[in-house]
Image (cartoon, rainbow, N blue to C red):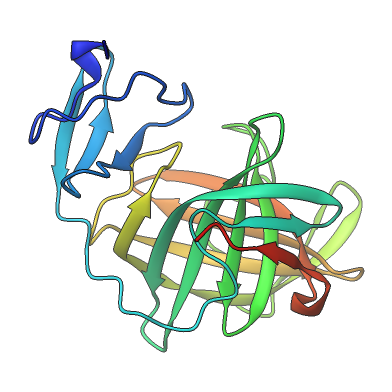
Amino acid sequence: MPDPALTCPNCGYGFPELRHSTRMFDCPACGTTLFRGQDALAPMGDHGVMHETPMLFGIGDAVWADGTQFEVVGHARFDYGRGFWDEMWALDGNGDGAWLSIDEGDVVLQRAFPPGSGPRQPDPLPVGHDFTYQGRKYTVTEADLAKCVAIRGEFPEVLEIGEQHLFINAAGRDGEVLSGEFWDGVHQWFEGVWLDPFTLTVRSGA
């Protein structure tokens, strides 16, 4: 019998084997977006409209990237005015997570810094600004406002439709990338590498 605390409050579907790292996800039975609190699951409301577009990979697919195999379990879409990009939450064989970002065919593999660590830049920097982190020089190549417009699958954090945050992307000389997200006096940094889409191997989970 599934734990009654981990059942969908909308339809009663049970989740006896929910990953400990999962904070929010879609109920596969009724589609309700759920938040995992300490004692029970709570509905989060709308999960947005995910318009169909050609995708390199999606939820359920296995992706070999940068020498590691990942299973894609979550898909979030962010609008930045001039277009949108897709963020895939993926888990490796040890259950450790990373973000696979897809923007107009470009792919970045990134992992979050622990809270409070990363570059000491509490505010977004303008495009063209140079800064140094751990002895490496980075140049800000993109800075904009992002809005979450659709979510599907599982995530390690709460994402809300309509939520907005400022972001920057900064490139290093050897293909490294640092990304920062800034909202309500809080910031989070991510580090990763650009990936050639033609080097990725994808096994469809469909």
